[in-house]
Length: 481
Image (cartoon, rainbow, N blue to C red; front, side, top):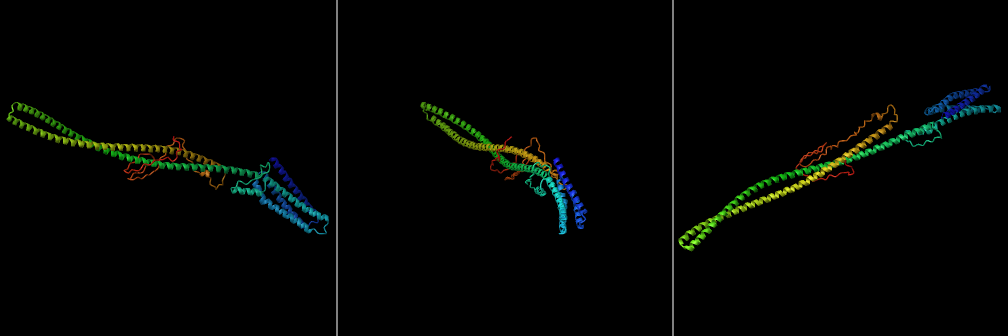
């Protein structure tokens, strides 16, 4: 407070003036005393010289302390004031010892009292001024110099927990300024620690997100492998179906030809059977005529001619019957071949149906794998969004941490982190493109090439087939969007 500073200044000046007046009176008394010894005059001259040196130094220390220059005042007190004060006290003690030595029993009591009084007065004046100066300096420091040194040493070692006790209303002393500095440093360190904890937490989130993303990428590669295997299985089944269809077509053509041949044979059988039927009718007519003639004429010659004709007709009928039997056997064989071909066609159609069912299952499995791949891709995109947000938060906290550290002013030879720190990449606010899968190389039997990066293109097929692999999502709490 200005009033407090003015009172302190007046007190110090008055103490200095009183000390100067006491020294002047003591010097005058020594000079005017005709019985003073040369050694006594030398001691007095030395005390006067030391007082002239000590007084300005003490006043400068008080002035610096009252002006708020605590460190300069402390340094001047340690380097100049204390050595001069020690020398002054030593000279005063030597002067007192000298006076005690020269006193003898013949000196009158008044002279003895006078010399002792002068010594005591000189010592009292010097001690009073020194004590006054020290008390004023301690008051301006706000505490003992050793306490201030211990506090500075603790701060230099990073210990900001050392308690500082101030007097009521003390806000201008060196200790008060040191306490304010300690509190400011503690606040800065607390902010830096919080920023570091935030950076650590964001880094942990990013690491966890990258781990989840890696797992989903592996699952996506497994789903792609499953899709490729299903495609290989589907291609193999399609080839089998094509072969079966070709065989069925050939068998159908062959069966058609056999059926045509069978039809021709049947037609021939029909014509033959018609011929037999006609011959039978003729035989029946002839027999009727013979019966009528035999009944009417009973002529043997006519009966012989008729019998010969009948025999000829019977032979023709037998030939026709044998030929019909042969044709029927041929037709039966042809129909057997037709039935066998139809059975083979039925079996091939059954195989085609089973292959179609297998194709349907393969297509369903491929659809499920593609759906899971789509879910994993969406989850990966959401994870990338969260990773980007965590990276943005990490960048913001790093900037705040740097701004907090920039409060400190370093020396010219120290490297400034704020000037040399790398630029933080800006995070785009617009929509992000889906992640490209980098090199999920899967080597399969039969020389199948690796699954490509950057896009989900259809992989090439190989002859080898693998067991289907169910792609599972690693973390189902992600929200699809």
